[in-house]
Length: 265
Image 1 (tube, rainbow, N blue to C red):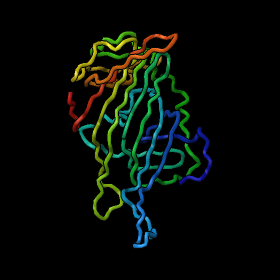
Image 2: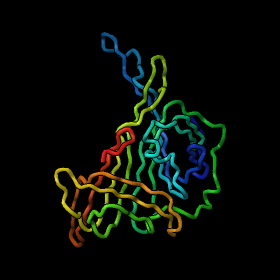
Image 3: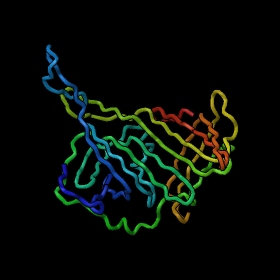
Image 4: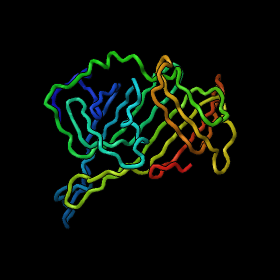
């Protein structure tokens, strides 16, 4: 592991050889151990119960066309190849997307949060960190000013914000005699979209209400469409709240399940 104090300007995050305009990043590594005891109850040693697993979480801005390798939905049909990357003088070769989320609100930049599982070794690089000065020149940033929600009329008026997330489970498959996984499967892919406004539209029935929605993300000036994220599923939750001196706030939640890359709804 890196032992030097590296200032944030040189703590460049790179995924798939692309520099990421990250605001925060956190890298961790964990070993899963189980104590082995003798007949007296004394611990003899500790044995591993699964491969060493790391985690990488980072928040970042979109400054151009959204990188497909950061969207778990672009490889739903298969498990996808592992992602290599580096951060703050450390490198990994086998990263797997586990989640992506973001929130949209008026007059605010859109900050994405990405989570990854890492299997295999994390190695130290022979440098004092790395910087990419071209990131300082980026002027197009994903923003809520021109971003909009399209699709099914949910009957919720005055949309003031929406939250989007896609998550999945990653399960390593380990061959006998190996320490690391031979592959890592992607399972239980789920999309959630929450919309806040002044009401909740039509009340849901026992099967929920169908909705097909799409978030179209633009930069600050609305001159460039960066990407879009969809959610085709059922409205399963509605909520109304109010407090003294305020107005009634409504929230609806839509969920979509994926099965081997196919939409259930």
